Length: 211
Image 1 (cartoon, one colour):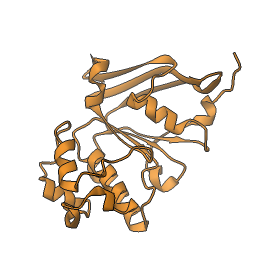
Image 2 (image 1 turned 180 degrees about the vertical axis):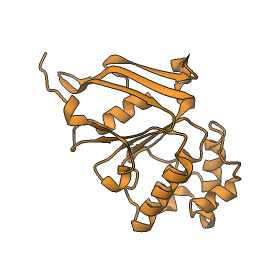
Image 3 (image 1 turned 180 degrees about the horizontal axis):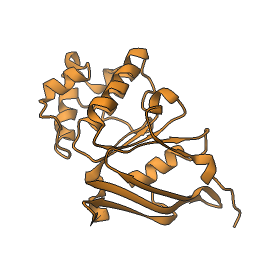
């Protein structure tokens, strides 16, 4: 079983600590909400967990059946959806799905056509992503997270650009495809995380310290 451990993680930019002394011990099937006001460090924590930026202090470890996974293989364990991550807009949907699933295996035995239908994008398989609406792009981001064989799913504002139907679709996706995954959701919208049993409030770990 997959597990993640963060021991006293902290991130500092210049002389300001965004967060400090944050520890996590999570297993497959865990759903964690990361909450806090703007500037509290939610997105920064997600980026650090994804390996997009290093922690300033602390230690993060991934395990599979209690055997530690080398940090060079962390990327194989995770997927991420966030507003600041761009899709390759010159690709068609079909080209992008072929490209993505060269690096991650598709889950559920789906074909690409079946996946596109699940994302309500079957009509757009040959359309360049640059022509997608913001809602279509968000469904695509979420879809490749939930339908990739990855143990850790990191979601930053997962329903941004989704209407009420899209939000309901996202919540169904969590229930149907997210049960066995370790799910971490950074959000201020309870509709995105009210099913989470664990919560980290970033204000509890935010300290401004001048060195």
